[in-house]
Length: 367
Image 1 (cartoon, rainbow, N blue to C red):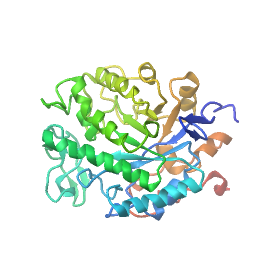
Image 2: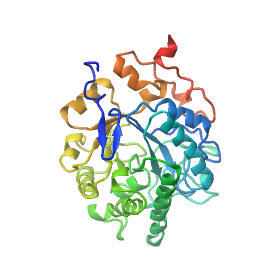
Image 3: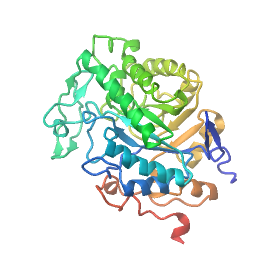
Image 4: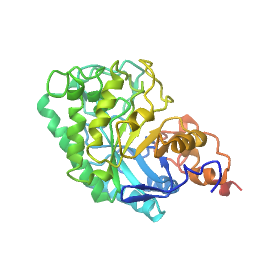
């Protein structure tokens, strides 16, 4: 065990799941599932290459057609998608890995071009103030979303439950509920995007209601210790950031603590941008109100990840961009080998191909 990462590279008992180390493959959208959104062999290869992570978290995966909002991202709402994911899961398991599926609804961060002309849905009719969105028709401006009717919300909650059941059918070890980065559940949680006056908005407690119902629905299909939740309290991605962010996310973490979840995944770093509405929330703040395993994320490198584990602020650290060009990231950390240069951004989302996806050599393959 190298002296540079004696804590990061130790094993961890994630409830009943033994993890080989505390390095987590962060969920990253890579847009390789094709127009039918069915996971495929090249995706299986990508995840298997990175199976030495303590835990693999898949890219965000949509729970329904309504949830779509990214070109060629995968889904989990048809039998064909389940079969595609089963191939991925089997390859990761064969490589000795553990894998969770991230459940996603894009909410207002979508466009009518994904929905045969129907507007994207959101808690309230508040559009993203930002750059254009890539749609099946090319770049288009964001639209004012349609506010969901109260009686529509149970149907979306049911979609999350069905997606969890399909994830279990595909063989996943667990799921992560994506409630971050300005997508639907984050939109319900935050006062900037939730101006509702029904049971799903109007107060900190009511804004948590949607996530609460989704968590409880997913727990009808999977045990709590196989379900994680992801937050981004500091993030500005997708035009987010609410004045009462600290109170809202503290309350939400307190409420989630009662369920005995697998972990709370907090994007505490500022690499995705910071809303600058106060001091950034820290892992220590979440540690004070959430007693289960805590995962940090966003901008970590080997040194800062080791420090977070050593200090006790985090149990696990999710690594994103360095994992794109370093499929053997854990081995590089373990042997103090240098990292490969970051992948070119133009290759991150290249549809279909291996370039910038599965063509990165390991350190030993580089010779």
